[in-house]
Image (cartoon, rainbow, N blue to C red; front, side):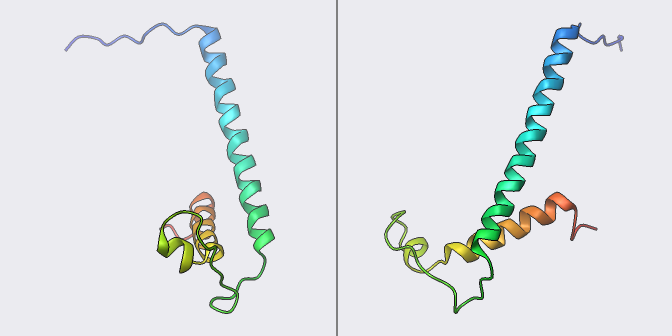
Length: 90
């Protein structure tokens, strides 16, 4: 086996990668803040008494007439925050 060499990387490329990493980090923080505000906007939601349907919006009869968008969002939110904080992982 021969020796593998790394391709030459310039300082400018390293700085560009760092800048991109910072943008991604900021985007993730903004996304989390936005999700937390959406969850706060929904407030207390007790299924089935607080559930609702949107009516014809997506063309999917189940999503439009049966599935509660608040319940779906809360389930997705809880899963995402759990993954982000490492809760529920062993």
